[in-house]
Length: 222
Ligand SMILES: Nc1ncnc2c1ncn2[C@@H]1O[C@H](COP(=O)(O)OP(=O)(O)OP(=O)(O)O)[C@@H](O)[C@H]1O
Ligand SMILES: [Mg+2]
Image (cartoon, rainbow, N blue to C red; front, top):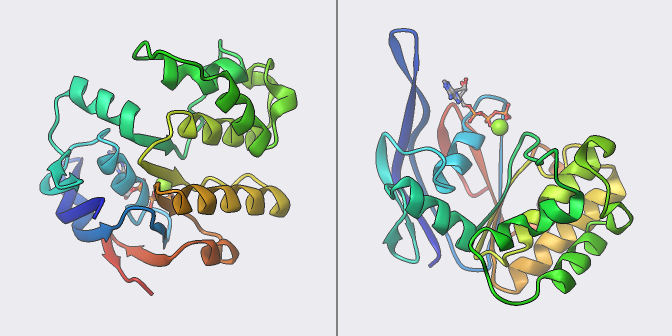
């Protein structure tokens, strides 16, 4: 078992009120499993991924990765864990503007002064997401879909055990969407656990299971 979430809740303050963005969520995702999460805008999907990635701390509950709690690490431990184990394609644009596409993709590899070559893998990933020709461009010169594809390559550069992707194909055409979903399927088959948040019903078939989020509560699989 790779990822286990138990009784996870998160509230946010809205004025004087505490509002649940996530309420009592339970989920187990096995190694190499590819899970989809759907749900309306504001239902808590990004909050769930941010909690798993350690960018938010839970109000209640625990998140276990290979039976070890990851939900209350120090900032430093969380950063290191994220860099080593998690690839996260965030919902917004997380590109670093003053780095080229190539440098953006290689950055997670270089953060902790790793030894060895990353060039070949970066080239292959840029090829796989279809933006090899843009390797020396800057993010401001890219379209929204191209930036998304760059973020996907960057999320995969460290060969994560867990890939989190928040509407990764929202800006893409049908053909590119299919290519990205096939890539996710391939890495899941090679052992990476994959969680994709999507509104696109036609891509659900690439995954193994689909859960749905409604007002902070997770149900399924359907
Ligand atoms: N930092 C925050 N402070 C206060 N409220 C927040 C914060 N982040 C999220 N929320 C609230 O939590 C709820 C869930 O937000 P979340 O971003 O998880 O939704 P979502 O399902 O990802 O929506 P979308 O499909 O639009 O991306 C929303 O009501 C949102 O307003
Ligand atoms: Mg969201």
